[in-house]
Image 1 (spheres, rainbow, N blue to C red):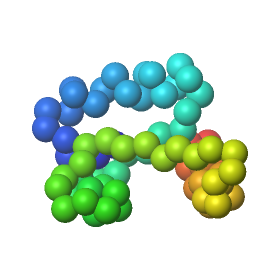
Image 2 (tube, rainbow, N blue to C red; image 1 turned 90 degrees about the vertical axis):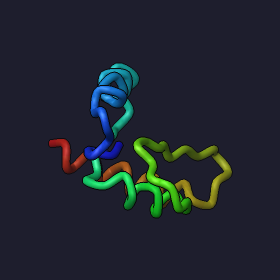
Image 3 (cartoon, one colour; image 1 turned 30 degrees about the vertical axis):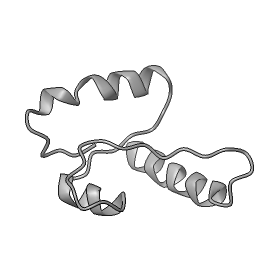
Length: 73
């Protein structure tokens, strides 16, 4: 989620939902940077990373999830 979203209130329900579903989340400083990370030229205020069982990215996603969880401790 982008910390510079205007107004920030449009995102504030997402952390509560994520915590309720036991899903890790992070805030990043810039919606422009988040958009670039998503591979688009527009600013993005929120995105998600998903995978299925057969995904080649599953191990990388798990490493990222573990790194995020360490930041939350």
